[in-house]
Image (cartoon, rainbow, N blue to C red):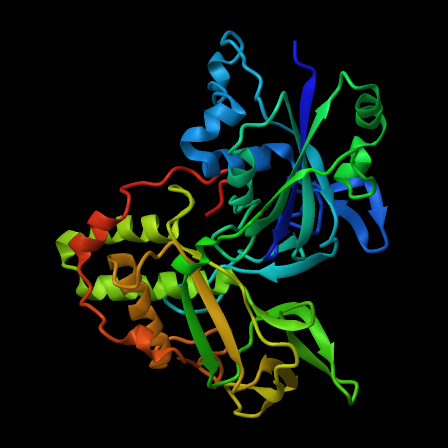
Length: 433
């Protein structure tokens, strides 16, 4: 019987905000909290906790047909699990060690009425998320690892937690280290018993050099990237207010690491609502059901799960100019200023640029890519605004890479319907699109 074992250390970098959620406790002020490890307090709060089940599900989807070879057969349905035979996964996920990205941020969000552009009643929620960062996935398997395991792990692009189509949860594997040990050797057995956990955490040297696989490729080339220039100030707010130099308060903007942030949820709402308007304009009455299917398949829904399209966060450059405007609220009956109605608004100023990255659209000439580019053209033409107060001189943007708007094909509802899946499975983990 072989006494070989392979330890595997995969370093994952979360490129965007991320949130592995849990149920909110009764009376909690946070509607969508994140999971933390109560055993590991730090100066900025508890460390994030990444469940192995979330990682295993993401890895199985990445491995595709090889999933059963490395992770064993999928578990049976709950109703038959008590009598069905079980088979352990050859590759075991033992846990994670978070290295960077410890800060927990809180923001408020709301759903938007597509017709009026105003917030829907009773939809305000408070949610938490973690900053981008790195963590190590500790894995092992009995015997020697298959020759192709390292390369397959290195090409993994994990999608973790909630909000994966609205800017959260995108990651990439930076490196994979495979360390083969012979436990029949006394020295290696001693190291395995006493130092392997420290090696996973980067605090111990291995008995010999591991095999290292680096991520040399990326599917980012398939993303649709739209560079946008701010024409009118853009304000995506949060509950926090900024203190101005004169001591007065101003409605602040959403930030990440000191940079102004336009979240993927805002982009997704803009593109979905405008796509719905376009499709309703070109579709015949008999195609109304087809329009609903296209929207659900492309953008997701609470009943169908996640859609094809995923909208990443957009960050302004460090030091991008901001502007503060002073406004007053008017009494509609007297025409005068409402007492105490003076307020200020902070926004990303005109001239700044942001990059919008959309995943899942396929080639720009595909039916879905063509629909997305039609929405981008409407953004460029000023028919749609970004952020709040779009009717008060805020939110206009222009597409910088204008070639993206050239050669648009007419919207073909039957072609769109044929290009998207008829139905999507429910979203994993949290069931949110």
